[in-house]
Amino acid sequence: MANNNKYSEYFDIDERYFPCIDDSAIKAGAPWENTYPHNTFINMLTVMERVLARQELKTLWIEGGYGTGKSQCAYALKKILEVPEAELRAFWDRNESLKNKTDLLEKIVSHKKKGIVTVHRYASGGIMSPRDLFFAIQESVKTALVEKKVNYLGENTLKESVIAWIDKPANKRYFNDLMHEPEWKTLFSQSSADEVLAALRKNDVKALMNNIFRLADEEGITALNFDSDRLITWLTDVIDRNGIRIVLIWDEFSDYFRNNRESLSEFQKIVALVQNKPFYFIVVTHEPQQIYIADNDRRNQAKVSDRFISISISLPDDIAFRLIGHAFNVKKDAETDWERLVEGDLNKRVSSSRTAVMKATTLKKCRF
Image (cartoon, rainbow, N blue to C red; front, side, top):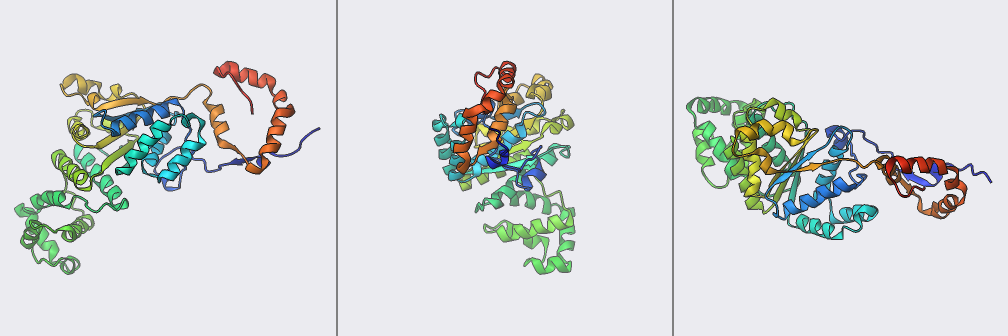
């Protein structure tokens, strides 16, 4: 007997679909939990766990061609490391490919309890120099620390860079002039650059540093910056004082290498911090790392590639069908009716189609 019911009567389908995981998609609430945990995704989680356990003093380089879902995987990695434990366990329980990976789950949960701050950036086309890179890392990490409500933001290290800049005669004159403008005169309790410097050399400088950064932002003083050594000192200070680990995931990082091919040594210094401290600078690119850094590795004894573990995101032949199955969730109150239809003549009608799919994808079983 013909059945005129609609699929919508049997399935809940998540209509939140984002074809590309970028900043706008993330801000719009792209769901991480819809990530399908295929083998290379699980391998990524397995390697990340070893890295967090300090069994590998390296970080990850996630690579994959267009359409492989590497951005979705990288975003899911960020969320796995930061969402509440109950949300992570629910994700694990929903996916058959993860249910036999309970040991991996418990290890990740244990790492999360010890304190992880995750940072995510997308695109690097505007990073045209090592200085741009230092600014971007510091800005992103500090924003994540604030969002995580971490108590100590590295004020004592930041202030050394500020002191060095203000203490230069020309900068001191400029800073003095700014402090006499009405807006800043009322903000600062100090009346001169020398008084600011004296205050900075004392211990409790958080309020003063906030005022200085507010002035610098509004006046466009971009010179209050780091070099790689100061950035490393700041990251180390933040990690040690807060007892945390920092995972920075930078998606679409390919352009950085194209724009800075001749100056990878400063990038390498930052990445190499992982050997001494739990700071994991994870890059995501379209091509394998060798394409970007082979020339640098040949020229230098200290190789960039030695700092990374390559994680190649690839999709199995049958991924389209697995994703379709992953997206269709049978409604609880319709399970019995749906099973009856499947076991009836529904599968019989698509016998030839199933055979063709199984042949093309090497599937051993194909049913609704």
